[in-house]
Structures are given as structure tokens and as C-alpha cells.
Amino acid sequence: PARIIPDYVEDELAYYEQQIKKYRAGELGETKMQKLRLHFGTYAQRQEGVQMQRIKIPGGYLTADQLTRLADVADRYASGFIHFTTREDAQLYYLQLEEAPALLRALAEVGVTTREACGNTVRNITACYRAGVSHTEVFNVYPYAQALFRYFVRNKFNQNMGRKFKIAFEGCADDHSALAFHDLGFHAVAREENGQTRLGFRVYVGGGMGSGPHVAHVYTDFLPVEELFNFSTAVIRVFDRYGERKQRMKARMKFLVQTMGWEKFRAAVDAER
Image (cartoon, rainbow, N blue to C red; front, side, top):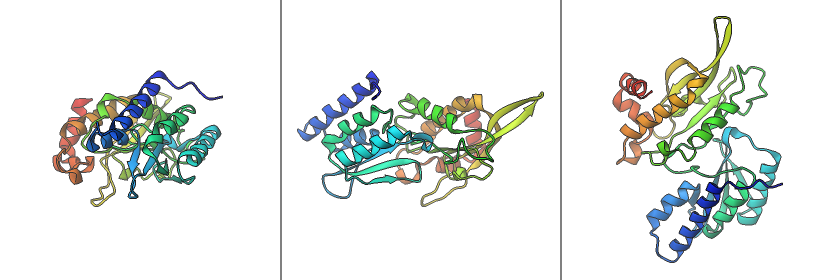
């Protein structure tokens, strides 16, 4: 049975639909439309008049029902082809802008979102593809990736940053998630304290690929799991406050860490926490 779509999602999609109508009637400019559609994960394609839709799969985990629905909407609204990306998104091509809200509604019925799949915000949060089944994992990181995704999606702290922000989780002995090339990377660790096992993360900050690749710095060897939201919010707020806004090419967090210097950046995060 289809889930009931939450009211706030219904409202968002109705708003998206209404803005598309305004845009088609010439009442909404190209720049505003671009910002809005990117917020919903709808990208322009190189081909004239068609869109690509990016769909978030947090932690890389889909149910059978969600996968079936993904196939249905690919056939109904797009080219029938699904591209699964290295950052655990699904992308559909050759979509008409007018049909985007209907596609998003069909996905929302099975609990899938495209919100903030693009734009200057926290992108899809990924987790190791072996999470929950790996024989080398310290603990299953998937629930933490899922919780952090739910915490940041629609969160006021990250709706209009200088640039996009990428987060990944890894639980295995081997790093399958390339944590050192993410803005934030969390590697599962466990500690014995007073005869009790405490769960936490070794934390990587400020990595990135692209034209100027940077290997992340290790912020700490042990961040208790309870501090995940507080710490992540602090980093995001520092990035939002001090990050580059004019030169897009220099606006990722790796450049901010480089400009401020690791010690100064670290101190700013600690003060924010």
C-alpha cells in the first residue's frame, strides 16, 4: 500500500508545480527557476527542453517497493533508463519540467525524496555498500547515515551555503567510501571505557576531489556517536559563515580549510560546538 505523503511534502510539491506554471507563463525568471528546481534535484540537460532528475538514496539503501517505484517512474516520465551514481543517487533523463512534480509525488508515496539532491546544500549522505552485512564492521553505520540525512534535509543551517557539501560513513576495516575525499567522513570505531563499549567515529574533515584534490584532515580519532549532530552542525555553520561566496571555483570547504589553515579552522569548529 502507498504511504500517505506528509503535508509539508504535499505543500512543497504544490508550490513547485505552481512556480513551474509561472515560469512557463513568463512570470518567473530563469535564475529563480533554476534555483528552485535544483532544490528539488531537477537539472537542465545539454539537450534542449528536457531535464535530468536526481533522486537521493540515503546510505545506498532501497526497499523492493522503492526500487519498483523507481522503475515505474523511469518508464512513465523519463527515458526508462536509470543511472545509479557513485554517491548513491539515481538519475533519470529526458524528463519534461511540467512532469517533475508528478514524478516526485510518486516517489514521495514510497518515502523517497529528491530534495537537496543538487544545489549548495548537504547532498546525499552515503554509507558503505556493505553496511549491516560486513564481517569486518565495528558496527552498522547505516542508521547513523540515515539519521544525519533526516536531520539535515530541510534544515535551515544548510539551505543556502557557498557550495555543496558531501558526507560519507564507513564501518568496515577497509574504507570503501573514500572518506578522505569528502567534506565530512565518519569511520566507525569502538572504545572500552570503564568496562563498557562506547561507539564513535574517527572523523575526517575537508577532503575533496575535483580540479584541486585535497586529502581530509583527521579531526579526532574518537567522536562519540551522541555528538554526531552537534559536531556536523558546527562544521556546516563554520563553512556557511566563512566559506567563499563570490568565486564558485574556490567555494568548497577544502579551500576554506586551506585558506584558514587547519588549526584556525579547527578552533572555529570547536568554538561553534
